[in-house]
Image: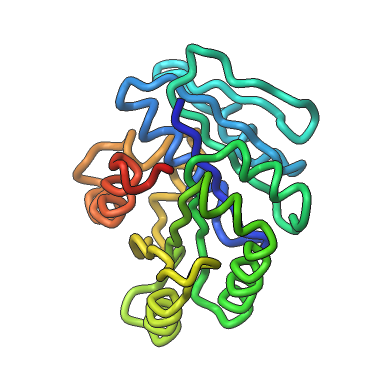
Length: 217
């Protein structure tokens, strides 16, 4: 089973957008998907609640309410983490994951929060080195802006707890397509390709990485 955790202790960075679009991508490619929502706001489950029955089924679980175990029939587990996690709860989530995606917004506050999160990972360095791969995604970036350029430069300099460079996969623009998808319980990969081609192209580096052995322990 493929297990992917979307996490950043800073709230409002687009974790649910990443998680739900990943779930829709894998479901639309014939995978059996479980979307585990660890956030009490239940935004991922709200997205599932409005998902049309005519589209591939995605199972959901309120992981903030109950312990769960993904069944043998699940191909891909997507975990949407809450904001504000630290210490033991982060370790518990990391033990479930093969891969971490950390979305970061183009603002000084978000970049500093990302640095603190990566610094905290040093306390669980053994877990990171042996059991999970981490990458960053620049999220909700307005094209050709100073803030966007600064975020790109920041992410290109960040180091992991083991001293290696943080993999930085792609830049996702601030797009109305994500709002439309959230409203309908869909992913951008389930709209007509011509309507979301720019956004799909921005996802390609991340998806190539996720579908390669480089993203797995």
